[in-house]
Length: 142
Image 1 (tube, one colour):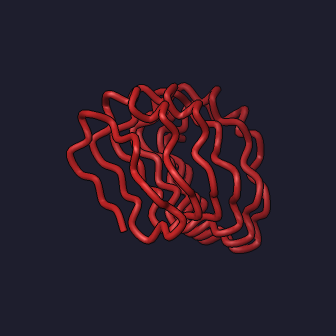
Image 2 (tube, rainbow, N blue to C red):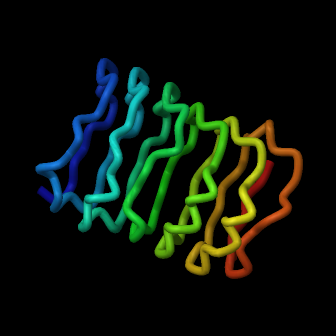
Image 3 (cartoon, rainbow, N blue to C red):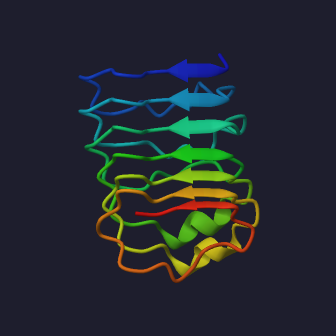
């Protein structure tokens, strides 16, 4: 299985460990309103393309994702903080945090050399942008 599509599973509260889904390349979990807990996904070696948790508005913690993921979509979640460990996502080109509750980006984000697009629109808790990766081409803020 290359694409796992769990979009709009409104009663889904927790994702399974996904241990037997090592070949998944794209994981779409958009619109799972009851989802509150995400498993560690660092073991998913083939999950390189996209992780989409947009509109999962009960998710509060930034997920542990494979370091080779390219697109991470966390828009309209309840995430309040981007961990410093984001620096490990060395292949990340697109980060969508639109409409989240984050305050500021951690200093470690400047180490993401591949990051080209960051969307922070509608992030009303952000007070300043101290750190933006040098190679970022598209930076959308409020």
